[in-house]
Length: 456
Image 1 (cartoon, rainbow, N blue to C red):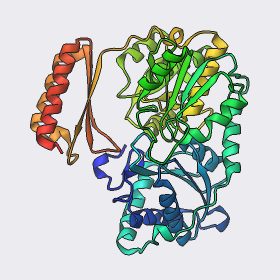
Image 2: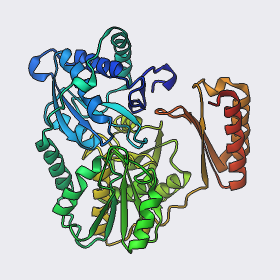
Image 3: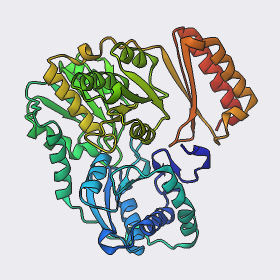
Image 4: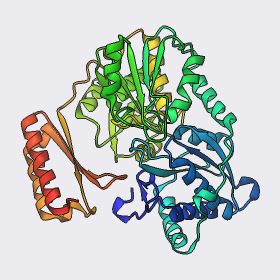
């Protein structure tokens, strides 16, 4: 994996920032289109790029500006309109596009936006490819004169593409009918709002599925709802007497759940349920699951009791997928709700994840609580520290000393994971330990040391 410190534009999930400001100003966005267009195969028939976007008010002008750069570079551009990120990944691969682009900042607030890139195979572009594009993007952003976004025509959306994606989701769990399940679905006023109502209705959920936050206005995406706020849907499940809650983030590539008792069920619990089911059906290759450094030690212990070995990748679903491909793993994911089923999709898909779990509930006749009730979560705390720069923490003596103290004190009874966010100027201090008091003490000490040296 390439260190985030060597990156100028791309983070762990594309380019992200405040819409209208560098690196999402019109000049840089146009330059991204130029650089991507120049990287495509030179055969005219293959130089098609698919665009998709979420519901932020900035997404249309960013899409139009990027499309202008692509066309300047000789590429043809088509749009699937507002669609989940995994929808673009699926359509890029199955419809023969040279690349796919999603305009979205995922779970971030409406003021932010981003650019995610997929190759012709439907997988996120490797670090090496993105980093190879950076110099050209920066060169063009200094030399190119972008068109005024206000002067660009709206891109025509091909809604038949969205229909193909809905059909794929339905076919992935062809036997599942939702009429016997009472479900609350939070669409986060994001891309899921364009898919979930039609999809769930086709699956017999017209009366059994309550859809919430399906009226995006450009600024209410992720606003107190969605996968970043799973407690909200958990409360709705309890108040409405439903069995299951599902909630997606802004671009619907992640999913979190809630049980009938209002318990939040995160990505770790989803991995446990799905791993056991795949193993029972003989589909869990070599009995391994790929999680990340942020997954709880309790997940590792629960999987071990079921004869399943857990591997840890770096944070970021692309790094989970890279390890899965190396190990030929059938399941992987993140605590945050990015779940990867490579036999079904090339990237994390929140709606697909929800359907797979709902199918498991229907087939087993068990509740979510029964399926993951033995997951004993170690106490865990995450402290986010806003930083002005991302210097290597191991080279800062005061920070390094606090980390070493925590590691020595906790030893086999806990874990210390300190990392920079790949999408924001944050240092994340995560500690798990059997002793909650020691956990909090060390987390705060490390956070204070980082804040003193690097605080924004």
